[in-house]
Image 1: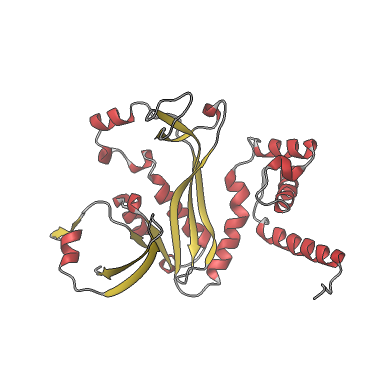
Image 2 (image 1 turned 120 degrees about the horizontal axis):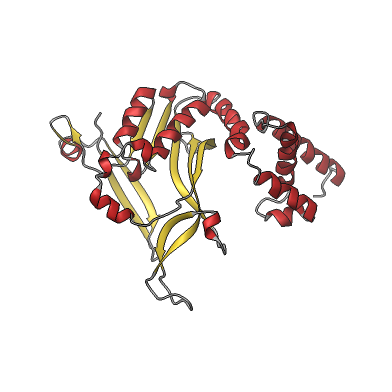
Amino acid sequence: MENIFPKCCVNDLGESIMTSWMTKELSGSIFKEKRLDARFRDIVKTLSRGSGKSIPEVCERWPSTKAMYRFLSNDRVDESEILAGHFIQTGKIIDATKGPILVLHDTCEFSYKRKNPEDIGFTRKGKYLGKHVSSELGSEYTVCGILMHASLAITPEGLPLELTSTKFWTRKVFKNTTQMKRKINPTRVPVSDKECIKWIDGMHQSNKAANTDNAKVVYIGDRENDIYEYFTECDKAGTHFISRSCVNRLANDSTLAEELVSQPQHYKHKIRFTDKHGDEISARLNVKVKT
């Protein structure tokens, strides 16, 4: 069936939708200089036309490419200003959504290959697992890149809404970290001086972005999220959380494991997945619940 809309009409419609979306999404992103506001909107419009492409590919011309790089390297621009409008729109979507909101938060990394990795920073240590011309098998190396801790709001049915918080950082040095742990008890170090503060900051930023009753939000994290200070901050904020246990903590007069063993089975949940050999596996989870 032939397209009944002329190509020019389709292009105009797409341009109109894009303009409408930008007006809403970027309305809360206000920079220290007005000229930066206009430049930011031009950049978003340009990038939207070439999703997945590099900046030089999208810009096509060197003057446009240089202007985008200058904006991104400007000391008067940071990610909080760029994402401010997005978080405001997230709050409106969450406020209009009925029922509880699940916020999944975790950390991922962006890896880069640079001649001078110190200009960016490092994310972790690794070991060469294969044959390399200039490196011995099993030797250690540091990965150049940026870490991002992000929180994503979804419905209980699994419908993604929007991001509620992000935090970016790099690790400048790894030297002597293992030796330091032998001299200093990590549990005695204030949580504000640890990298795990990202979980608490993410929760507070998400509550602010959600702009709703905190009791409506349930935060979900993995074993790294098993942090006592995080639990207390969630309790103070009046929000709910589910964290995978990493430590068998004290609970009443016993431990978490002992408390759950004595509880009756609440319900069964069956999952199916594919293992590393490509075989279909079925597993039954017996779920126990206790406050």
